[in-house]
Length: 239
Image (cartoon, rainbow, N blue to C red; front, side, top):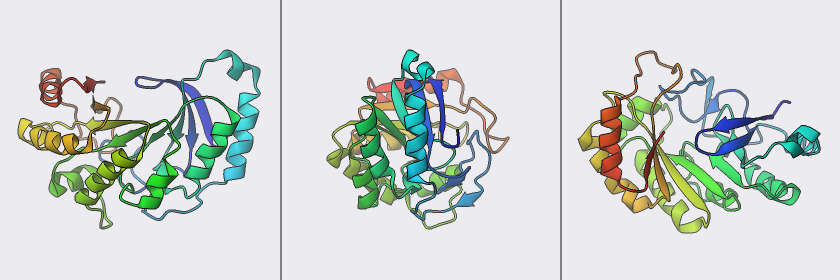
């Protein structure tokens, strides 16, 4: 299939049926840790990158398949090989999926477009939004995400705060830890203050586990991960 993949076993979501909403590596970031490699088209332009009707046709065909009926799916996950909130019709897609199946919908986002009220409105019918925040300062943010466009960390933080206020489902916040970049106690203590303003249901610490976009990227050691988990407290999980 062109858009649908899986179900795949996810450490956090169980059996996840994925839907990719952009062409390969169309993203607003070029993260140094990305397991898919370098971004091919770096953009913040929201438009119809894929065909909504074709996605729905694939999904209908998939859910009518005997294998699907015999395989439990915990989430339908909007993610794939780029930033899903770049897709203009993501809100329509979520509404259509809700009419087709009674399976929770998760959206995995790098949080870059959440300052846009229309993007947030498009996500309100989802059940779970897994967001990302890896830095407490613009300098560290740019080292990790290699942004070329004028994307400001403060806008992202404000977007996350607004999302928490407007969204009634669950919000998980992922923190990707990179050795020597954002894994210091000082950086994480500053980030905790920001996270407290956002108020996610869970904080999920992750580290690069597959070959990253940049070969210098390394994960922190387990002792450091545990220390950072202590900083964030009981809502924090390590993956």
